[in-house]
Length: 346
Ligand code: FNR
Image 1 (cartoon, rainbow, N blue to C red):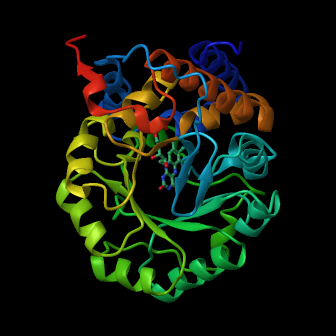
Image 2 (image 1 turned 30 degrees about the vertical axis):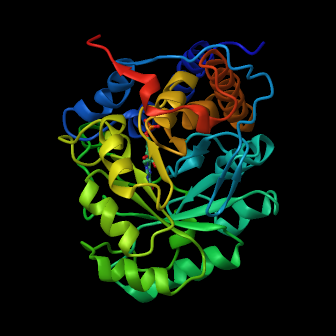
């Protein structure tokens, strides 16, 4: 039996913290404002309990999920996070190796310290998605889309919650705003990456410019989820950017049910923010997410032990989710349903 995820994660987090420059640790760990949303993302999961079904003979379990843009061997994806070489010298290549070995999807960020073509080259059979922020100069956005297509990415993820970046006190206190010499956001070299508040017409033009499925990330309001479906998005990602944007929003798991209801099965809904255990994965899926993304746990694994650390996180999460699913009487993620989640006051 694999060690419990909380033990694995606590150990890797401690190891990562010891290994990282404190400025970079705070960049990864921190959130916006008072970090209320950062804390709420995890606390909101703890307030939910699972109400298992019994006697369902569920011994032949299948954890995999099919999504527009690929299959994942479990309902856990790697959320896009920037600057993996700040965590470990192998950077995004290590993350990509671990994702490919686990058979799950890596959402590679536009702000990666390794060019996307090198990330996808790690394993041509692995599904890699490309996350981008649409930019003020739409030709530059189009160039990034071509770059992702040429690299063989299987989907695009447009992050919509960042018309400006959140204000991170920890980074301000450290005066952190640049990568150290020798590291660069490789996909954006030589490009004008000025961001601008965007509208649905930007998203429409981006979607029309590609045959890849386009996901919209950073959705918290059901009306925006409805618009995302109307504008042809392949799926919606409920996310508050891991508490790094507006520090006044709901925990992502609390925002999920209204969005699932608005989308009404027309496209898949993913969730990220505060997922730290197999039980959290099960709760999100029961409430209607098709899969979840994890951000910081991957960074702790990477900083602690490179690709092996990321593998440790993914495999512990797989093992724990399978265990919870078994105890809930489920054979596949689809067997987890909203009636199996109850709110506790804890
Ligand atoms: C992020 N996230 C993020 N999202 C995005 O769309 N583009 C990006 O470049 C980044 N960069 C980034 C850097 C760091 C250090 C973190 C921690 C997060 C947000 C990320 O995709 C995801 O929404 C959250 O990380 C999920 O929350 P947890 O799992 O970290 O709690």
